[in-house]
Image 1: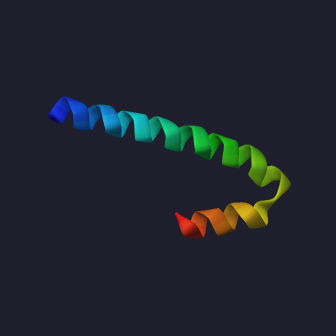
Image 2: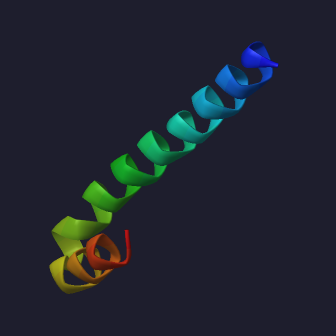
Length: 41
């Protein structure tokens, strides 16, 4: 059970890091959208 949970956490964490790195690239173009997304998080 714990291994399964750890696997999900790692997968979610990896997805979040990928999304954040994409957002950082986008934020250079449109900072407004980035701040709106931060509020939603």
